[in-house]
Image 1 (tube, rainbow, N blue to C red):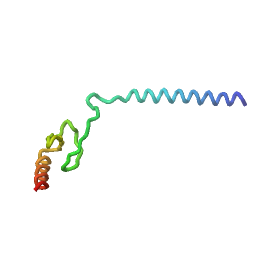
Image 2: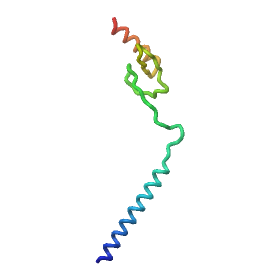
Image 3: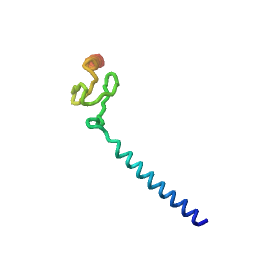
Image 4: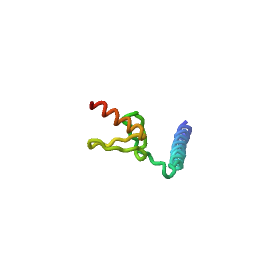
Length: 86
């Protein structure tokens, strides 16, 4: 009976080591391709969409930088601000 329990414990130990090695090899094999680093996303204040910061149309207003998805949203944002001030 003791041999059976020892056999089961060794089998479980072997399974754990094998599982760890296979999992580690699988993680090492999955590398991100070059140029696919995560990008910072910013929200367009007019249409509320999220866009990559590096491709956004940037405009500085009263010391604050705004990021827009397009020049059209920038124009609409300016019109809305003019209407709000009036």
